[in-house]
Length: 247
Image (cartoon, rainbow, N blue to C red; front, side, top):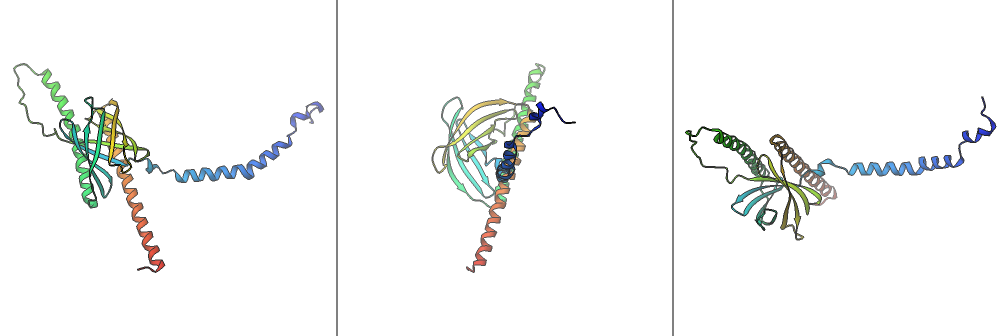
């Protein structure tokens, strides 16, 4: 059934629609698809992994020595100095830059991480013992013991914001207390950096341990990926050198 004559304008497609559709399918859509494919190819989830993990060994009352691991064969030793009494501003300076063998780097990293976990478990035991001391009878005495965990390390992991010069990370104080800080390079060689603490978080014990283990796993995955890329690039360079006929 044909529509009435006065309503034919409502069923007629304007000519500009076909022009816009042809322009979209022939030019805009291919360009947009190409740009999306290029953007997706540049997105690498491992590029968001932490670039640095630092294990701080305290030197009471205001200093600490840090082992900064940035690769499977790179360890930097930093000294950290507290600037003001509120534990908000620190300055860290590089003391040594070492390139130990691959097994030694893994050994140092896992030993330090194990000490961090042992210290977290030790703090939980201390909290339980303190509750027991508060609830113990008055005639019962608890023998004090030396604390061998007074110098156990604290772990800090930093995620890059733009590059390695500016990063944000967390420092584990114990199994519940974590400090969020910003690390900023103060000179071009990244030998002197500042640490500014701006948030203190008291989280449940399982959440704190989960964040520590997941961050450590992301860091380990990232350095393994970068190490594999370096090995592949070296192999490609050697093959190109042999094909060019150089000795």
